[in-house]
Length: 143
Image (cartoon, rainbow, N blue to C red):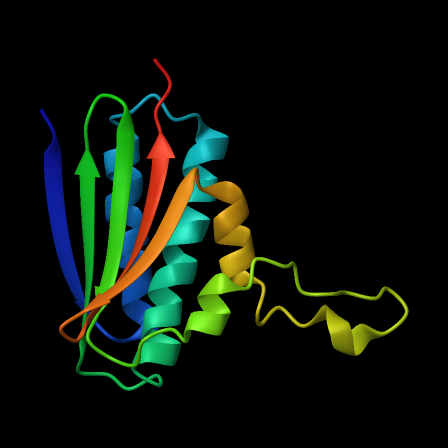
């Protein structure tokens, strides 16, 4: 049997902390280690921030929904918005952004988030359906 928690915030970066703390609380009910919880929180914040920054162009007044589905073996987290969808080429690009130690301009943090999420989560997917965009992350639970 699974348990579901659905949260909704307004599209303001200052609200991301509330989502992170709520999901961290759910993680405390699982077998995830503190390191795994920190990584999951990092991924969640990255995807919620992306929804606010890219789907809504940093404009307040729009919903960002986070749905956590927890069962004995898996934690599924869906972050949804009703704004601009992620372009296919961005979703399909699994290559790590290049960084050259000799050229500081390549050190930019921007553009690394999806790569980090793909590395830290067990499964990720993205879907758009009737104006609702959902980024789904899955993390397997230890027994």
